[in-house]
Image (tube, rainbow, N blue to C red):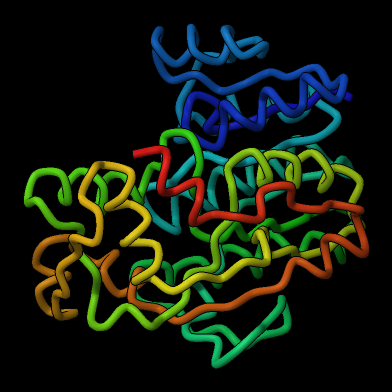
Length: 286
């Protein structure tokens, strides 16, 4: 299948291009500059020059593909919806896979799935109207699918590295919001890449949380990160207010208490996470 992908030079994008190619798909990837073009080419995709705001480029690239995977992070809900609309117009009745995230559900009060009510922190509140509009296309002959990744880890670690590993190394102790009893719905980057591939065959209007099914406490994650950088046991509790000062709005997302099951994706797509010991991974990849 010929797949057009946005966000290909990013953390999830590189893993997803690799997975798509490994499964025999041909990939074209949006590339906003020479560096991005070199990156996506190195992972096996043909670059399409342009940015997320180049709606004509997005529309034409989608029209020339059999499926679209939208991974790029938009600056706002308006930008994300405009890009999604251009690509859905282009792909027509082909599969369009849109990226959301589990943070939109807020605290889950125990184990939850895709039927949980939304209660997003301000950081991701904009996602609701975008995902509603994307999924509405299922009633108009389109094939929209939404993948909602949990907190990603593995490889570069991205957010965990930026807000926990690096500050921990600098301060001599890894931060932990409150007592750290809240749980994180983690997913390995290689597993989420496989879910994006599997989502190409999903039914129109499907929504899948992309999680590994292991939901450790934030404190245990902080301790694992501390071990990874030689700071065994050295974590420091900070208040949510302090976290907001240090991390910005994302602090409210890290403070969420979330537990999710990947059962729907496992049952409907045959997707089974292969990485089931996130603490061991976090303890060795700092």
